[in-house]
Length: 180
Image 1 (cartoon, rainbow, N blue to C red):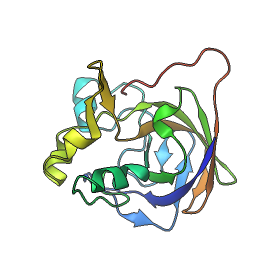
Image 2 (cartoon, helix red, strand yellow):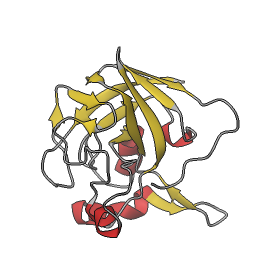
Image 3 (tube, one colour):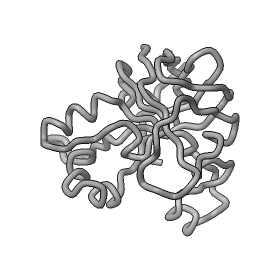
């Protein structure tokens, strides 16, 4: 399975959205260089309040560009970086990947998929009603999260729009993604 990077974003300050960049640098074990969420331990405020020693399984947030078209059909205008993601993708089923999948991006960078982003109320502060578009329930009543996936940096490198993404699924039984 493969796709491509359509945008990269980072922000050194706490903010819901992240400005687009010409490139970002991924640092092994830390995340996006200069991004407020980079680090070995959790950086998201709610998680820091619970336990600041938790490992940071949310170093890099990826979201599929196809989601923007989907919510656009419901009247929402969303552009890359506006939902706080670091890497916007096209052509790869991020939500269908199992935990532990390696994403090889460009010539150097390797991410390991850790789980699903758990969308929060800040999405409705960005655009009222958008939260219902990115989290809902399926026919069986199960929660469905569509706001992207989280990952950790296994191998660092520079990531740019236009870079290819190749997914390598883990050996053995696959674990479905859960919120992290």
